Image (cartoon, rainbow, N blue to C red; front, side, top):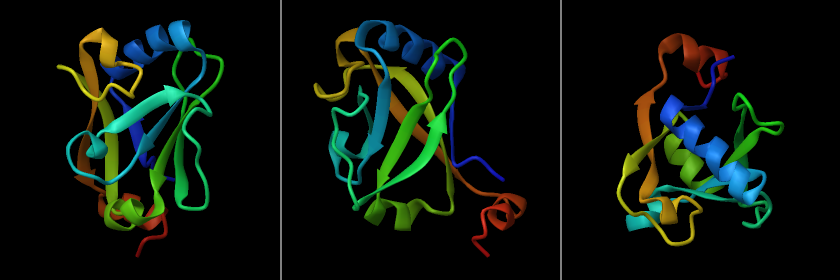
Amino acid sequence: MAERVTLTEEAAELLRRLTELHGPLMFHQSGGCCDGSSPMCYPDGEFRTGDADILLAELAVDGLAEPIGFWMSRNQFEYWKHTHLTVDVVTGRGSGFSVEAPEGVRFLIRSRLFTDAETTSLGLL
């Protein structure tokens, strides 16, 4: 089955450092404007998920004991369900609520449409 979410090596390295500082982590991708469209990284469980959210992936990071959950609002998923997401990191300040903000970097989503084979493996056809 195709993966819905992956990490760049730069993002994985930052997540290893942030886990040392904050413990287990999670992502939530909402759909708003500005920083609301960026993936937000929180200590695991700090952002409360519910029926309006979907767990898209549990991202395994070499060197971390626990995977990092990647959640998305159900409404946003309807727009992005045919899209592969890659979590990357870039220089610049993001939201003050995401744990990477004090590091002078921010997480960023890079996306592409699934290939026909990926779409088939996910049952989207």
